[in-house]
Length: 362
Image (spheres, one colour):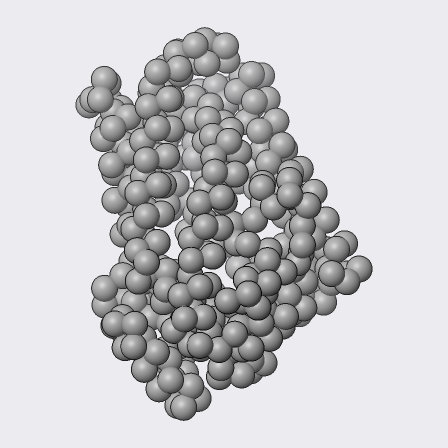
């Protein structure tokens, strides 16, 4: 791996650790110092009860965003420009931040309005009902993302390269997958990294190619990439991931249900139904996420290896697979051969060198 990729990767790992630790510290301090309770009481003085949750979530989210802004700016804007991975203007980046902030707030509001309502009507079994609601909501969100969320950030158009489009449709038919169509998006206006995806459910299912990939990779290389994406569907990886994440959600809420009284006492809070306890709930998920990440990454790497093997079997083109991986590593400044601990904590795909070696041995 070249020096630039090593340095870029090292900074990304460090920032990820700092941001996670910073989030945990903010949540602990916000709860332990009583600031969360002060914020909730202040809002309650001026806002009707019906607006307490929306107002509190908005104030808390804005406060966290401002506290995290220097880190976020460096991580997603300055660093990407420093390593020539983006040409996005600061004004466009700020617009994206506003749009993503509004979307995140709306999602957060829906989830926690449901959480507090269910907590009120089902004080004993709320953890299971809330889990089911969150799981269903995430499935709906996955279906809507291609048609409602992605177009807010990128311009869609049907793939202009008709030969490539037909080849992708034929490849999908070969593995017995129905797709709506093949689209390209103007990825280059935000990043110079390459990407492709097979997204959506049912009628929203489609292939998306970034222009940074379409314009720099051969048809054979793109076919291998999409054969990999189609393999995930054929191997039912998405269903498996949904089941794994659903189980994790249920376990997380059950753990909150069983232990929250002691944790709330520590922070001098009365109950979960108190909006002031919101940072404590977030703290649970932050810590739970750190604990679960290595396991989720491990399972994801297994699925990615299986998808790689199927892609090689379907296309029969190991040369295209290897050249595609070499290009991706260079274009995305990938850490080709990370330390085992780095791989354990951060990698949800096998490292590039492992994937190339697997192709050579196939």
